[in-house]
Image (cartoon, rainbow, N blue to C red; front, side):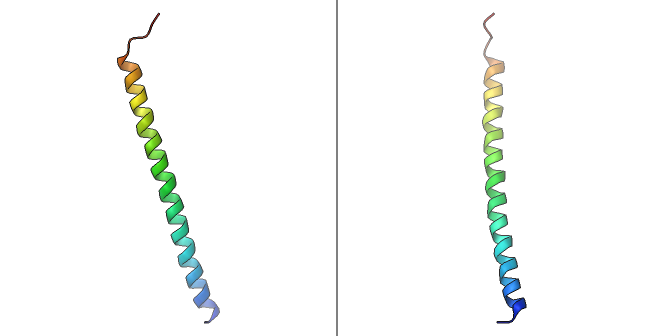
Length: 50
C-alpha cells in the first residue's frame, strides 16, 4: 500500500478516536451539569437554618 494509503487510514483512525473521546467528555460534562442543577434546585427549595 502506498504511503498515502496509510496516511488516510491513520487520519480516519485518529478522527474516530478523537470523536469517541470528545463524545465521552461532552457526555460526562452534561451529566455533571444536570446533577449540579438538581442540587442547586434542592438547596433553593429547602429553607436554611439560621
